[in-house]
Image (cartoon, rainbow, N blue to C red; front, side):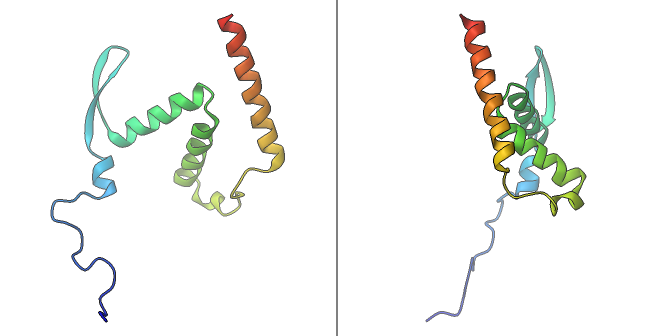
Length: 106
């Protein structure tokens, strides 16, 4: 029986960690103009765009990320999941948004 545990080889040579990956600069087009931004910024922009369009999961993830980054001391007091009342509010919003979308298409 071997006493070695875990990844005995370690990280492969040349393998990149998450921080390195997210700080990599990529080229994107915004309003027809080419710009270079980090992958991290691109992910946040994409998440924000989805949240603004009504994606409640993206909005929740974005808000939690903002709190974690800007106000870490508040995280301890935040509930792990939405209360039933909060979920009901979001569900009602989603139904209204879908109804409005369907009416605008008709």
